Image (cartoon, each protein chain N blue to C red):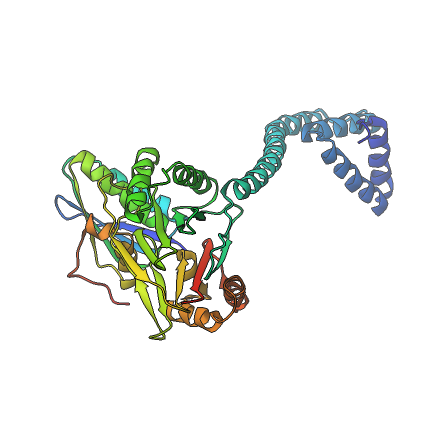
Length: 109
Length: 337
């Protein structure tokens, strides 16, 4: 399964729209697109996960790496429009308590 | 293997025979010759060279342009020959790596092997099936002299060799914990500090740790972001999710782990697994947890080891079933009240 990542910037805010499945094979692609953005001092990064139907632990690892990098570079990352199945993964792993996850915008199943 | 000699005369004979007779048999011989050269790692330019020599001997008056073009071809093939040499050496390296991984996988099995403890009144079954050669799932039992047991089940992010290496780190950290440290939330806190210091930014481990007290038949447990297990109450005839709060290991050194306890009555069962079980796919569809529990329940009357084996076989037999992740399942059944 392929992963497509669109970059839709809105002024200062950098938006990544992720489409497809994030797994052990596609996670490096997400990492390559996401982590450099969080390394820009003070950057605001939004990751739109509306079209992500599956994510495995390797995908979570990419977000953990990105989160650590936001702390180092004083940038911000927000995850929006998560599917319930993906959200469950963030909840079980306790990552929802340390990441900025938008609960208002939610992608349907 | 017998040494192979590039015999110009033999090649010339073959070529001549073909040029004069167009005999299929000569083509067959050329095919055989080519296989032999490959077996002996003869480079392509050497074959061209022998062809040029033979051709010149058969036709001493080749037009100079043809002669030049053949030299041109020879030059062209030299780069190709280098690539071919690289291919051969990579193929050798690959074979070497494969055998090293096979050794590592069997070493992993020995290093990480754990013995199912024998505790009166408790029936334990466990199965762990790697999706690839090396297992990123891990489970571990310890028993003290009072028949109390510690149960760890963990899943390392990613697969293959790096996951297996991280697993060894967990195993040795667990082994080196002082015997007095039994409190699951403390155990996880201690492991978290080890993992946090020793893994790269995007690596983490999920882990469930339980401590079963023999005297009181109580299981104390905590979870570091691990897939929640289930507690089956025989009295209520229903499953309860064993959800507790706790961040995965290796992300923040300040993480705390909520600890919960459950008292086991006769025929109560604890079911622990990794996400390889809940993330099972059948064709395009994921198995729902309810379906997984239903299958487990249907096998729960069996001895625990037979039950876990049969549950795995059940999923394996499903049409279009694919094991995308390592699959680990542990069942603990309380037998006498």
